[in-house]
Image (cartoon, rainbow, N blue to C red; front, side, top):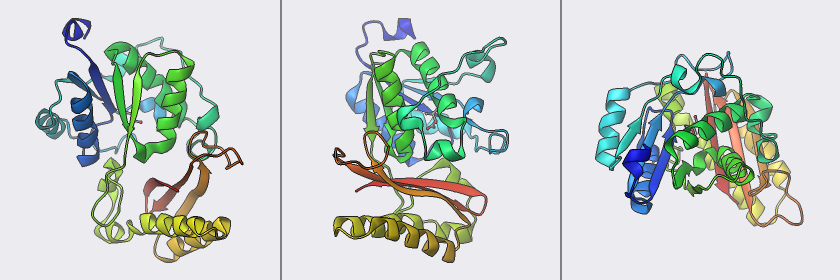
Length: 265
Ligand code: PAF
């Protein structure tokens, strides 16, 4: 990588777990537009999955991913195996507090340590100038921004807006798990977030709107609400008088699929 980057200008990087969709390709195209060399990694990171989660069934489609990346203008694809990133004797972890606390961490305690550890390793190996992440994983984006700031990593972190289906469903590799019936129900999550935003904008009772939205989602076929929460968009903590922008974030279960989404409020 060091040889490839020599004299080639800015390196843009998009870390992924593969099973690429239009959301990822939009990130790659954005990286293309702001850098000279574009690198994408594909690695399903075992550290960010709990033993009970979907590591084994996570969709893998390497050949299709490579074709899509070529079309999107990616120059370098990095496909490390687990023993390259975590060789025998690997014992280190990055533990994050701040924006990593609450929300996802309440339900996936291993997640941000796994993400921060792998992303810092990938950053050290690829040594990008710019890294592009989707706002779909809004808390992850905040955690990576905090890590880069705290560890003085000289990388410009760019967050890119969520890409959605026409009916509002946020693109996600995990949408592949949805049955045809579940796929019809899934966009109701975004519609519920929009309703809560409407109440917040009108100065209404957002706590009540959130509780009602949760009940409505269960009535329309969702199985479990992990959280629907209005948070400070910068800290991801509770809204305070200093809050400049708010973000509404949700994680819900539809059958065996966990959907996450968020919108600006
Ligand atoms: O968002 C993802 O796909 C993953 O969490 C990431 C950032 C590639 C780390 O494994």
